[in-house]
Length: 274
Image 1 (cartoon, rainbow, N blue to C red):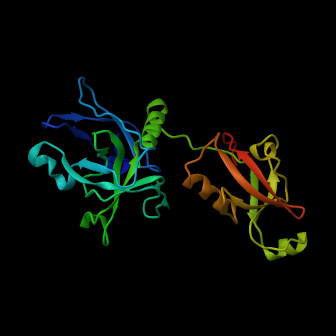
Image 2: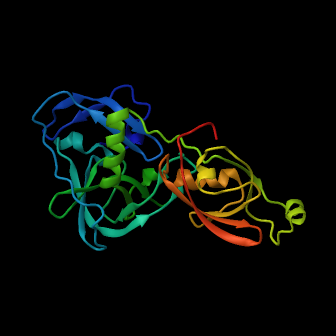
Image 3: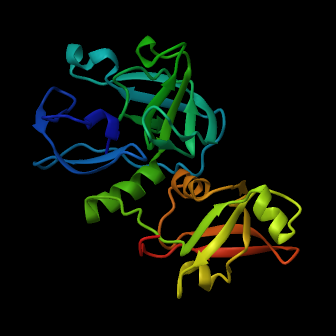
């Protein structure tokens, strides 16, 4: 398992083991949104690391980042190690405008992560892999290197993406809400006698759809989705994409109907075009 941005646009992928032995790797699948890729090597008796529990981390516990910063692996045929602590957990960045990737539930560490560390393991004090080193914050750009603020994908999340890539070769994020909405405005609010102009008004509900099953009706006004205020179909989509939701996952909607507020649960269905 590695980062998708590490193998993006690669013509050939070589995996070098400690000691210098090289293997050409095949891509089983990659997912740009979560920045996870799954590779396959032909061979046997490969060394491997135990997996830790990324849901049971303590702020301040020691961690070690392993990798190949600035190509130093080439000098010794061994990964280099930097040490630090867990600085924070559950760090959500939403969609990164520069790349379109979504970094959610990230682990923050002050173990030095530099160019070349991406895709390498972050391990706990007993050597169990708890995350994948992924991104850093630096003074102005990534090439400057670490200033002690690095982020890693929790291994539990990476494993879930990798399992789906192994089974299907891709991540299926198609879904259907079964509704069409448009932004509220002053004219609509005046016509309906509604005392506010924010939200997204439902203009159509598909028959036998997720929305109909949830009890949503035309002229309902969606105020928020998963506690995030929305004003358009794009806002609703952003909530779904940012949280990496897909068919089978649930949305919590806050609605305004006939002068009253209602809370409903909408279970995303498989895509039918909406």
